[in-house]
Amino acid sequence: MSGGVPDGPIPAGTPVPEFTLLREDGSEFTRTDLEGKTTVLVFYPFAFSPVCTDQIALYEDVLSDYLAKRGATMYGVSCDARWSQTAFREKLGVSIPQLSDFEPKGDACRAFGVYHPGGFPQRALIIIGPDAVVAWSYQAPAVTDLPGANLIFDGLDAVAAGSAPT
Image (cartoon, rainbow, N blue to C red; front, side, top):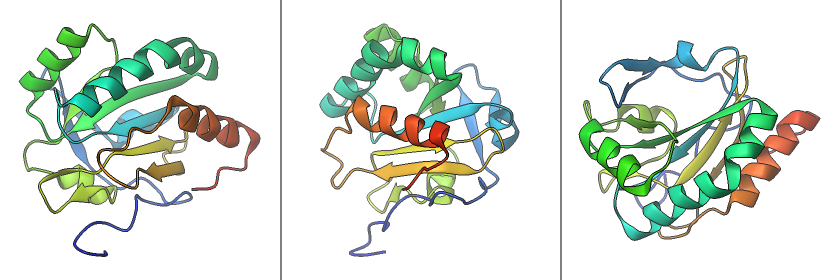
């Protein structure tokens, strides 16, 4: 940690830690839900904030077909309550499922190395392989920086080629 901010997300090659998030319907989403498929976790600070709104809307517009072709699934993750996330997804008109790390607040974000001491997730992207091992990860230099969809393209391409650096 530098200045109270995590140095970066969980690195490639690390088995995914045990964690529990809540889906919008209140059911649990855990490590076992990642097994057998490629998953992109999009950590973002706050539903309805300007950059987060732009980020999720951009990913929906650009990535839907690409993810399907790669056999990958994407989830948005924040420390917002699941009701807020549902309202956020519905307001944006996006299909990206949202996962809540509301209570205990930030436990999963901490496990993935992306929890900011200010009480929210850093803006980060983590790609997990079907073996539940982190294949690629990225953390934006600042929470106000929007990671372009090209980073997800590059990460998934690197994973497919077997050369996924963090």
